[in-house]
Image 1 (tube, rainbow, N blue to C red):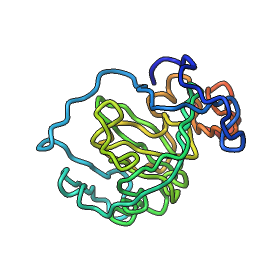
Image 2 (cartoon, one colour; image 1 turned 30 degrees about the horizontal axis):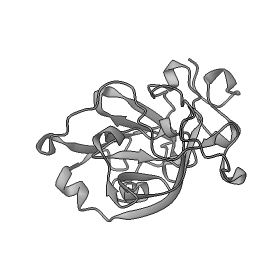
Image 3 (cartoon, rainbow, N blue to C red; image 1 turned 60 degrees about the horizontal axis):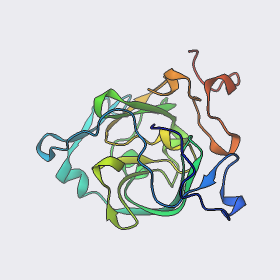
Image 4 (cartoon, rainbow, N blue to C red; image 1 turned 30 degrees about the vertical axis):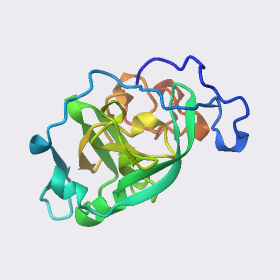
Length: 212
């Protein structure tokens, strides 16, 4: 997640209707993450879809195969829980819809767990994952992601706080019951809607997530 935003680079006249409550527009793209930046090795990299798949089998792609999937772009904002927002970025990569079509979930799947390097994870409702703007990003504004920003793959879920879109993604697990991810187990809100300022678990209402 990184440290809270210092305010340097703040844009004073941000468009209010584009910003969720408590957010400030930020020029540039601060690096925020927990732990070290992993070293990418193309020959060892694999993206997996597993868990409650429709046919019970897992699906795997190596880096070359995943890079050959249809390329999709989304113009979307990014809202960090540390209260900065980046507006109007163009994200490019593989849509979650493509992954769902190639590796369908079982009918009773309600959530997904997105897995990343070092065992990092983030849980999402299946509807959030299946949203038309959810994307496994490889590029931002036409440029390949840097290692610090998640190369070779990060998830972008524009309508949720950015921690719900992990960097260095390696796979998706289909779940038939919700299970908290890394930050959700450590006090962050299970859903993470920035427009409702769902930042922390103490704000959760009944039904928002499994017990801590």
